[in-house]
Amino acid sequence: MDQLAFPALGILGFACACGLSPSAHAQDVDILDGGKLLLTNGISTIEGTSGGGLATWGTIAGRETDAGVGLSGHATLVELPDYGWTSYGTSVGLFDRVELSYAHQNLDTRDVGTALGLGKGYTLDQDVFAAKLRVAGDLVYGDPMLPQIAIGIEHKRSRDAAVVKAVGAAESKGTDFTLSATKLFLSYSLLVNATARLTKANQGGLLGFGSAANPDYAMQFEGSVAYQPFRRAVIGAEYRTKPDNLAIAREDDWWDVFAAYAVTRNLTVTVAYVDLGSIATFDDQRGGLLSAQLAF
Image (cartoon, rainbow, N blue to C red; front, top):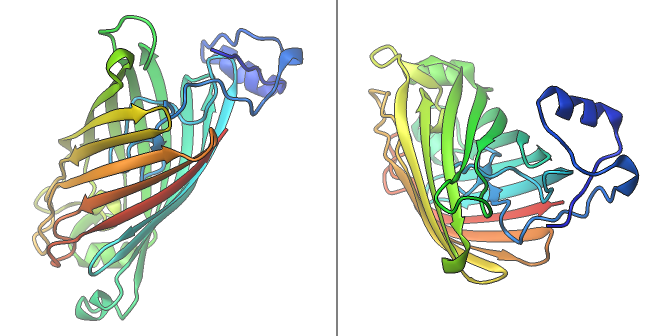
């Protein structure tokens, strides 16, 4: 793989403190000339982490190799029968080892807002601050039976504390913990991912965290399978289980079927059919996802 290095001494110092070993010298740098294989940085999830559209993977954001720094940004729209969901954010990848990300989510209640007593077009907002560390393995190279394993933390803060408390949530902010294992079987053009998520989040956190009856963390599962029919395209499917904490609103598991296309080595566009089940008493929330990611 082509290698990168980064000239900023502060970043290199951080890398050394984390036990990272950038292998190129500062004078050899081309900071935005990422060397990862096309599409192996994944896309941005609705929570801003690298992975699929709904599931977090063990991948690290950006196109950097283990000798560089990567950047990415995303904008995602999910169009549902009764809601509009948007997410946008940015990520930094350090030496293909550490990922730091931020995403802002909006859930537009449209006409549903009136029925829920919030007012037409009321928007629920949430900020997600996340970090991920690759602890073992490599997505593409190394032992073919050892996946890339990463641990992650996602701190979520609802901007609608009064609303989420009114629907029965115990808290308006919470933290998810993830453990992901992801492997690309290059000879088969097949990617497989499994993620365990420890969470209290209701609808990903947009309806708060936990409830009086269910205040504790619950272990959830996220699985993804993707196939690369040719170099610039990936098709696949994901499934994500969810806790069901709120007495007034059933919460269903999520799933999607997606296709991602690398328009250039930096720009990836993803479309998906998504089924988010019941959201705040409104069932059959099935629709389309459109996402664009710019990565370096």
